Amino acid sequence: MLCSWYAGKGLESIASFFAIMFLSFSANALAPGKQTLEALARNARSDQPYAVVISPNSRENVRNRQLEADSYTQRLRELGFAVTTIGPSRRFDADAAIRDLANIPRGSNVAVVVPAPAYADADDIFILAQDSAETATNDTTSMASEALSLSFLSRAISKSRPTQFIVLIPHCRRVDNPQALCPAESLARSGGASVIAANNSNLETDWEGISYDKILPLMTQEGLTYAALYNRISAATTGAGITMSRSLNLSTEFMFAPLNFFQNISTPCNSNRTGAISLTLARARVSACETAVATWPYAREFVQAHEFALEQLAFAETETFCGPLLQSSLAVYRERYPAGSFISQIERRLTDCEKRRVEKGRQKDREAENVRRQDRKQNQADQPQLDSRTSSNVGSWFVIMGSYPSAERFKAVAKQNWLDAQGINAQLIATNNYPGLTSGLTIVSQGPYSKDVAQRRLNQVKSVARDAYIKSAY
Image 1 (cartoon, rainbow, N blue to C red):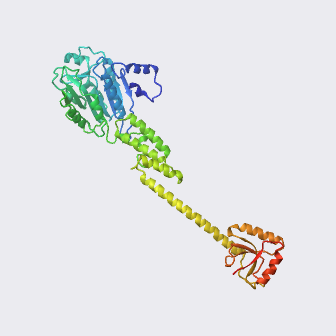
Image 2 (tube, helix red, strand yellow):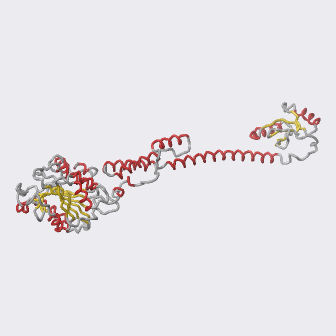
Image 3 (cartoon, rainbow, N blue to C red):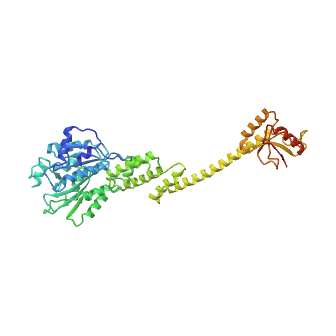
């Protein structure tokens, strides 16, 4: 897991890489000495919190201790903490690393987690350094001279004047009196921290205190204050041979995960949380949410965000144009999300497409009517005095040399021009005013005439217009 801390950070030095790889299989998960690790999350609505995880003695192979130190470090980074680890160190080096904690930015929220076994007397709590004597915990005098004082650590951090300062000690035992509680209040007075310590007085066990797998889920509960965390831990350890000690005034403001923490993490998964989005954005959001779920698998907010991102993508992939593919693509969405968030938009899209289809048909009808209207106007322009009488207008008969529907006007004009070229005075008339003439356009040889005159005129034009005939207009 330590190697994963460096994922995406570019090339590290060869020495650091092999040091970390070696430590992954050693008895303690923390790198030697002091190390600072960046947060894996950034909460857009809160300042950067800081955490210290300290376990400086790799010789203490208490059950799962290396996994515990690593798990706390990883979880704190996931919750937006910049984490300083103090791993296997000589006492001199560990003291120097602790003094450096005074440089934490002023006014920060600070959490200290001590996965290492802690030993206490009536006034202070200690942890062993790498070079502490094996007999350091035999009596309180040796412990004070050989071990690292958590009061010293608390005072160093208090110099940065943190806004909220908490200390969590999952494994603690009184050296002078195993039945007594570790002095959480005394430690709190030394540096102003809110302190929780778990005490196991059962000498026949390896004195495991609060298991980290009980604490880690509580750390991720948004809005859970440190005081409420104590109550939850106390309830979970009832009857387990563990007693809890605490400072008098536990913080009711410090939270490992503030309210709405996961929704405010700076990740594209937290963008466009509602409504429809473009296909490009939907694909990007699904990818971001997959990463978020992998990073914070315990965060229900990201699981839900991922589910909705998939629905956004399904809707974005539906056909947007009215056509044969629209119905089938929308049917696929409805099948996957029968109560989906975009059902109403689908129904509106279908309704709009139907309206457009109907309107398109009406538009075609209007265009066709306009064409017919223009034809009628043009025909009237070609025969402006259709009903006026002439010297020959003494009957109802026409000599007809061609009949055409209105849509074939170009053919009628071509035929008229050809007849004119043959010396026949042909005339194109609109025949809608003559019940006996049914075609839209008719080519006649002047007229109308009486039937006898029309017959003589027909005989004259037959040599050219062999298909000519006479017909009464009424």
